[in-house]
Length: 275
Image (cartoon, rainbow, N blue to C red):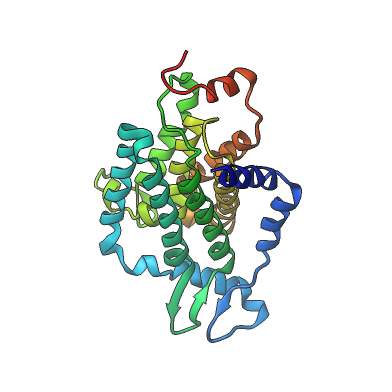
């Protein structure tokens, strides 16, 4: 137990350093991998090819399974709270591993096995922090009354999870809540996870929240450029549906770096039922 506390303290210190954020900046320069090789000038094309032909898009038949599992876990954590905390963290860690495999790797005739190395590395780092949370259990899911303004993340998280789109256009069919594929998508589940942690802040695993939010912010910025910068006429709705990723991740990162006020810290150190 003492060792876990010490390790958690080191992670809290490390994830606040400027060089830690610098490491994520350097990750953005990791070259993609393609088993058939590519010219350096095709670097960007390989990344887009890997992302656009990722494994997950070839298996839409499993989308409802993972979507329903996600819904059940979210309902479960709200009902059973800390009794489900460890298994919930394990589930989230596994989810990020699935995002890594499903959304970063493609098998095509053009490049063979292609990998968006940037996403591959960052997603696995996030998975690692959630796996660590399953060990230390710093997230406290005990319900406490919050100011109404803190709930602004909920509709945005629901929008991301719902992903009401069909062929690039708005489609608010409620069936998409279980068929859109969000349960296997980093961009759509990260706003849900970070939004959830924001409702329990500051009684959360700060390093896990910080890293998840940081990677979410990076991917959110990429999506803003891709959807509104490269081809806004075709991808504008997809861009709007990625706004929750951007704004909730930014919010989560700010919260994770914020020092709780004295009253908040006192409340954090008070066990449920005390006082």
